[in-house]
Image (spheres, one colour):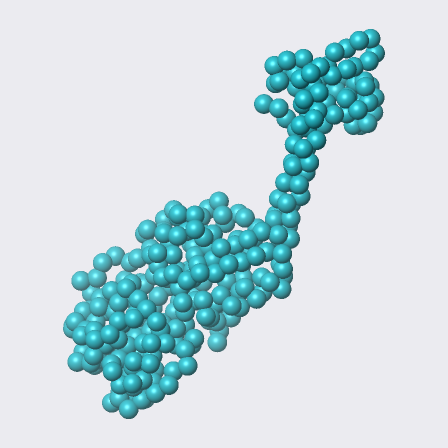
Length: 309
């Protein structure tokens, strides 16, 4: 294999006409130049120089290699400079995928901080709910995924806690997002300090994303009833709008409620407490990339600020 350092020596020898002159130009010894040229000829499998007394002249192979060396070394220099810029956060990119309520609350604060601190780093954002967002991370379609998982439900019908499918990923916990109940303003439970899930057993329900919907059913079954889901939508503003129109009740994460202007809706604490853990996910190798690590740090800061509000 031809090494870049050997190509630099060859160019110096070709330009100066001798090992000793090349050594002076490169700031090394004449024997070192001789050894590197021998190594290069062994890699090339053919002589590159013809030695006639104190002079050196290139063979046909040597001439060809010197001609290519200029482009190769220039390309390597450009690559080194680009990598140094990425490592120093003067350049680079991060492809982020997030679920909608994270996109409207945590992500803007984190990305604004990244742009202020590292303006050369480009960050793109697309939305997807888990588990699709996690699939995108594993398939190489993003570098960082904002996701969530629910805790176990206190019911024999409930399965194990989610998250075991993330064992091969770097999991950075961000915050615990409590779910709150939503009822129309004129509802009999509007204004209640706390509401047991069983008190909503006879209500029509509006459900969210498939993972949230599955968890809602588990929570309700843990409270002794199966919810009658009249409407299901992944759009949180639509959930709030349907509740505000008196078409049912719902539970939504606080992050989702925070990101929606809730008209005609009252929020109530529900029992038993229902929580989801919001996390940032990436691959182990990507976690060492400076731009990804910096974005993770900013997401953690944004989550810390959100948790204190």
